[in-house]
Image 1 (cartoon, rainbow, N blue to C red):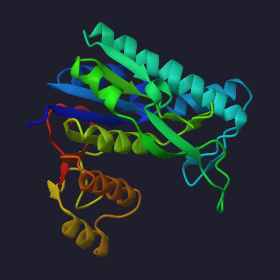
Image 2: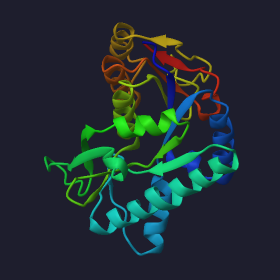
Image 3: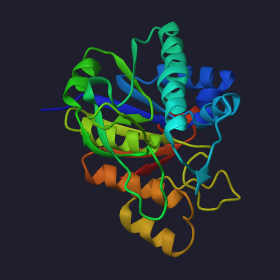
Length: 257
């Protein structure tokens, strides 16, 4: 039986936290045909509101340390301010949107990250995704807007990386749909040369990825992003595209197959 198509977009905090860029993003998102899901970040807003509340932000290797006070902030900001702003603006575009955290519908269950070298506090590592109920909403043309929060099943919320939320949601929903996962970042795709924004690698498979890593063409933060992409493909996601936010409705960018 042919599955219906689903496009799942992951977009970083910077784009959704500024009025003009959010408006442009949601206009482009509204042009995507068929079923769709939006996963958002919101770290800059969390940092700003924490500062206003006198709560210090601690980061290690680009990751937020989520102590008890910061957990309250990210729950408010990601699940409230950022999520509901997006939902309201999608409604204005005629899209029936539903804002969710991992706790809603028991969609994404995590466990508190174990302390190895660093104590990240209330950071969640995903253990189980329950996509059956969410897929029914999607088939009714409801558009889920997923915040980067999960829960522990014991009544506690956990801060969870938005890339992880997108990847895990895409894998789980691939049981019900042909899923295209689109990761948005500031470049037009994965580049052959960091200094040439037009040098987009159009298609990547695992062999080519390994070759480009060995040659130093693909490096830094792009490596874990692509490892996540191949994990998604191997778990049943149809394709992953890495591109700019302005290209989400065009299909342009680097296709991971």
